[in-house]
Amino acid sequence: MDSVVEQRSGSALLVVDMLRDFTDPGGSVFYPQNREILPRVKEVIGVCRDAGILIVFLKHFNRVGKVDEKSSSMRPNCIEDTWGDEIDPMLDVDPTRDYVIKKRRYSGFFGTDLDLVLRENHVRNVIVVGTKTNCCVRATITDAFYLDYQPIVVRECVATNSDVVNQVHLEDIRKYLGEVIGMDELFARIKEGVL
Image (cartoon, rainbow, N blue to C red; front, side, top):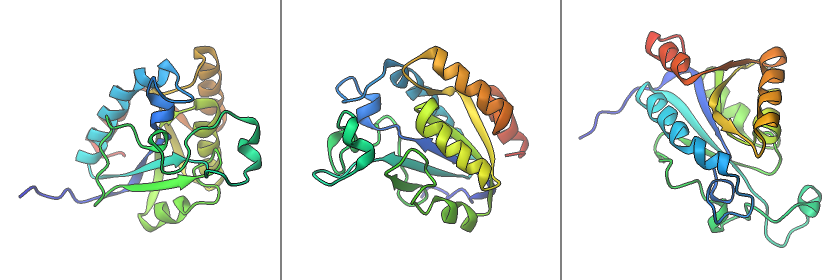
């Protein structure tokens, strides 16, 4: 029988919107950059899981056939209970330990119980990976900052459809909202027990 790793309090990994509509070439809002970061996101999830760090998958979604002012001017995407709304199969979700939180706005905190889940688990640091850096990643980090969490973005594990836009937002996040670090530094901090 596999041994259960005791969850380490203090940090959580937020995996933002790594859904098939964004990550799969057949997805309705696919960007190749999202496919490129998938193996690195998978590696970060594995290291965090082995260290007992809480993992939360955030899922952007839209309801089929229901009014939503936000999505009225956008291409239909991440329709609830469809193939495009599924977490990319490259990423393993452990239903006994991980949380999956659905969201209807860019921020993982807006209208969800993410803040409650983090506080119940005594989380202070939020490590963030996923897509899109300029929308859902940034909105989630901004709200984390407002709620007095310590946001930490893993540079190689976030993407959007423009490398220039990605870099501009990472620089803004670094200056005003939290830390932007590389995978090597993240893994070193986890090994040292800092995260």
